[in-house]
Image (cartoon, rainbow, N blue to C red; front, side):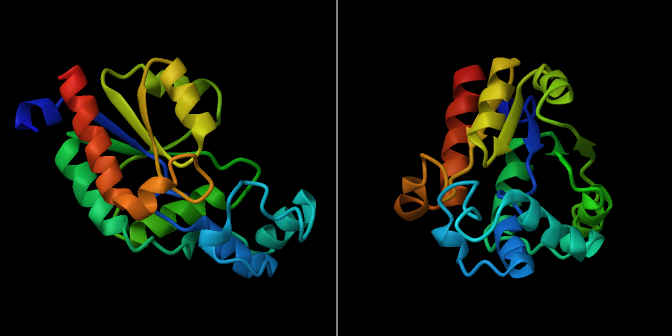
Length: 192
């Protein structure tokens, strides 16, 4: 991929499920006895508890829940791929119904040395659509709904391989980072 082609793309990076491990931290906080690799959908907690109990147990952890999120083992390698592919990047995150999420996530980014990348707080609606209109914006996200909405709003999206996604085959076949690198190469050559 040429330097010229790489410089005209804007990276939009999801935190939880792509770079940082929400699942393992949530399972610790809630007592759910599953390994990350056993989580095959977003409602995995249902056999153990309802949404309100799950949410309440995480809320009890406060801001430290978010600030202590572990970076996935592939996080540094994935960041290298992103830094080589994108001229500019931002974190795009949705605090949802978690009052301590934004401050905790900012602490997490500082602790991992990623605080030089701006963070944009956006729910599933409006603001993400505005970001998708940035020329050559590319979202990397682990939720298919977010990728589809970003694409519908005019941006490009890469669904990050996780056990709960339809592209989970890529985890074993080529690895998550290689999958993203391949997808970026295809996107940039298609649009470049």
